[in-house]
Length: 329
Ligand SMILES: Nc1ncnc2c1ncn2[C@@H]1O[C@H](COP(=O)(O)OP(=O)(O)OP(=O)(O)O)[C@@H](O)[C@H]1O
Image (tube, rainbow, N blue to C red):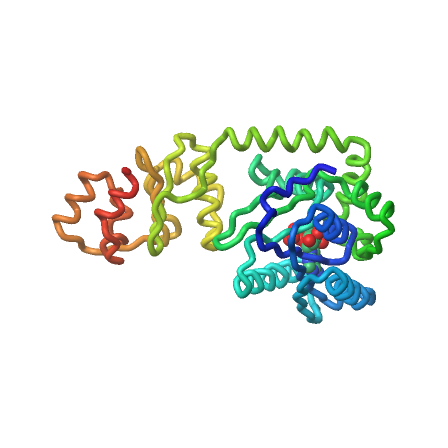
């Protein structure tokens, strides 16, 4: 089985454990590879078996001397999948902050990666979105690591059966209720069973292509609500960076707004956000009107701080010399 565990060695790891095929297999694979970890489980009380699953998690934790973090609730209403995910990740973050974990490990596998890919493909997506399920994600205070992304569900099932390890099958996955399950049952499981190696290799090639595009989503300067990125000198990449940043801030750009940004290079979106693409940088900040003194304006002109970003910098007293020093260094 192809597992990349190097990032987990000698670290404090938390495994998101659901007692299903994937996370049960991962539990034992981590043990087999002498990786230290504790577990966290959320019981939404959506299914009768969830109580047994929780009991199983407790038993495993006790037997293998792991700490276990449990959240119990009764989930109701609509949009269950999203609600469950939000609750789950918030719970994991709380545990990580309170207990100083380095990594959150989830048991997503190759079938999940293809399902994600197909779901994005069905909606209309580019390379970044198609490859959205990533092996490593850097969060502010920890990493999310998915060591099973090269391993098929079938292989994990075989591993569990060969070693007579108990696991639970999530029945909700059998109802073609959600779009993802349509892809799972109609297509991706059969496809992976037949072409596992090719699919895994293709994802690696695509990942390398994505890396070559060198899309840098990390700002080179951030203070208050002013964010500055490097100009990537490619319209498609620049708009991706802007789009992603604004999405994170809760601002969804329309196609017309994206076109406007690229056409004007300096523009105000919905009377709220200034977006400026200068020769070397992309500047994003709230749109503000403010009278500025001559000295400040002159400094901005000389140092190519775009007009639409100036009032915000002045108003919020962000040190303009510090900006210039940082971005030109
Ligand atoms: N109830 C749960 N408690 C703890 N961990 C869970 C739970 N459900 C899922 N996980 C973790 O998340 C992984 C993915 O689970 P699943 O495929 O069911 O979720 P998903 O809808 O793809 O969620 P997401 O992609 O948002 O993590 C599991 O392998 C497991 O590591």
